[in-house]
Image (tube, rainbow, N blue to C red):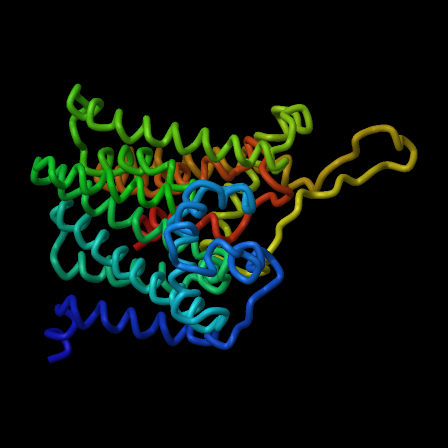
Length: 375
C-alpha cells in the first residue's frame, strides 16, 4: 500500500503542494510594506482600474516608476486589485499559489529530466519529489513569495519553468510546435521580469546534460532566443542606467568586480546548504582604514580576497573529480553548476546595479541546478 502511494505521482505532488502551503500560509496575515509595495500597488494608479487606458499605460509607461519593464507582473497586480482592491491577503495568496505552481513545475521538469537520462522510475520520482519540495520550502525563496513587490519573481519563474519543459519536449519529439510554445513562454517570462534573459544559457545547460550533438541545427534554433534576450537585456540596462541604479564603471576596479562577484557566487552556494543569517539587504563591505595611513583605500575582510580562489575551486574540483570518476555524474555536476552560474551571471555585480551585493530572491531559479545535482 505504502509503496503504491509512493509510486503515485499525483499523491507525491499533492503532498508537496499542501506542505508548501502550510509553510507559507502565515504570510496571509501580512500587510503592505513601504518597501516597493507602494510603487507597485498602494500608490500605483495604473493598476487601480482594469480598463484599456490603464492596460496601455502598464505596457508603455509603468517602467518610469520602477525602472523595470515587467508589464505582466503589473497586469497580475491589476487583476488582484480588480477583485480585492487593497486587501493584502489576496496578493499574498496569489504569490503563494504561483509559487506552489512553480514547485509543481520543478517536480515535472526533474521527472522529465530523469526519464531522459534513463533513470529508474522510482529513483526519478525520488529526485523529482526531493527537488520540488526543496525548491518550495527553501528559506532563500521566502523573499520572493512573502513580498508583494516580488510578484515578478514567482511570475517570471512560472513561465521560465514551463518554457524549459516545452523546450525539452521539442528536443525529444522534434516537433516545431513545442519550440514555438517554449519561445512564447520565454517572452512571457521576460515580460514578467528582465532576469529571464538568461534563459538561452539554461537551454545550453540542458543540451549539455543530454549530450546533444553540437551542430548547425542546434545553433540556429538558439538564435531567436539569444536575439530576444539581447533586446530585453538592453532595454532593462537602459532603464536601470537612466534611473541611476547602475554605477559608473570607474567606481570599482576590474579586480574588485571579480572579487565581489566571486564572493556573491560563493555565498549563494553557502546559503543553499546553510540558509542562516538571511537579510533583506546585503550591503557592500566597509573597508578598514589604518589611522596611520588614512589616505590609503583600506582593507577588506580576508574572505573577500579569498573568494576568487574559493569560487574557482568550487567549480573546478567537482568537475575534475567527476570527470575522472564517472562521465554521467560529470554531466550532472556540470549541468548543476552551469545552471546556477548561468542564472546568476547578471546579478553577481560584474556590472554594479543598486547598493546590494547580493539578494535572496536572485536564487529563485538558479538553485534548481544545485537541487538536481545534490538530489
